[in-house]
Length: 261
Image (cartoon, rainbow, N blue to C red; front, side, top):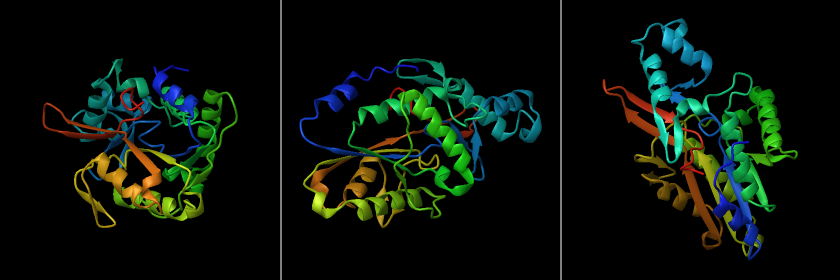
């Protein structure tokens, strides 16, 4: 495991002044791996194979001038910052797991810090049946990091959510359906780990609400509780963007960086 200085998180979980339920809504793409958005809105996996192709100008990346290759190379050269003396290559996915061991460890630390009264809900496309084997591998990897068996407690419905607003609406609907009004005397903490398909919070709408910031997402989700006053919500938007020197826009699901944790 790659330890993260999370004394404050652990202390908060240990104090436990009053019973508090903690719900973690977890995306996987862009959280435990790096996804790079292409010109068509699809996602490129940031792994050793694609990085090698980008460097050599071979395979589906065609040539060094190809935008996909340029984006992958830009990600590989971009510094993480926030105390991490490394570039995004630190988070390169392993071929079998489709995830970064370092990022898996960081997710496991957040799950631990959430305490025993937690519910971990999968929001990723990996909740779909065609990704069942991949999900089992991820759960095994998290179990290894935790030092005990782990599986997701639940998942959002298997509806289409290829757009950011669809993903957020599904999380909101899950909260509205599963938050029992009779239990609203118990405080609820919600932590959402999402890159929203590598989408910035730049003014798109969800159920008529204008989403312009992490705070707007948090306010929307709080409003889906039957008693919003009993809920606290925090979004970790695992997203990064920049423009290369030659003017190419790069948007990525950035993983759980040190800043997020």
